[in-house]
Length: 206
Image (cartoon, rainbow, N blue to C red):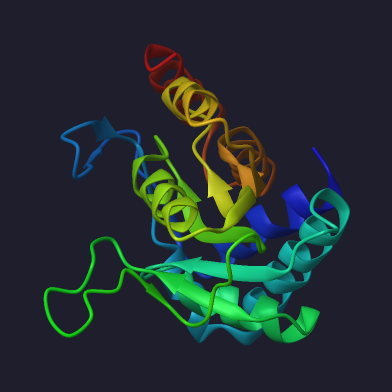
């Protein structure tokens, strides 16, 4: 576990952006019963956690995608983070809607994207990758070259790895499921038995 993985995991737990309830599972939109629920939209209201995350995204992008020319936010949760990152890097910003507008020019991408420009897309989390890969497809259709996707958190689901591979797209996250539950155990957020329950649940999705 890297320093950023640990620091971001701790920040998400500190602001209650991640809830762990192995004995009272949440129901995801997909219908999956899960002992973990992540709401990274809360980050925008907490300056210290926000700074940790934005600094991490900037460092990650500089390291992995040094040729980036445009930062893209995936609507809606990725937009504020993309805006702060673009500001810190001094780069243009775009954002990608889930669907094209049903009025006006029918645009799906807001901002200015020139054909051939190298784009890194930012989202708040990655589960199976479905929504952000839709944004990847839209960006490519508009002429952008997607270097990769970054996110605050990844559930580390095999489905995401498969989906990104099929889309010929790389992705990375500041922290992930493994790091988060380990930090939660070390800080007393969950017990040893609860950790085992959560790990067993994750294994069933492999």
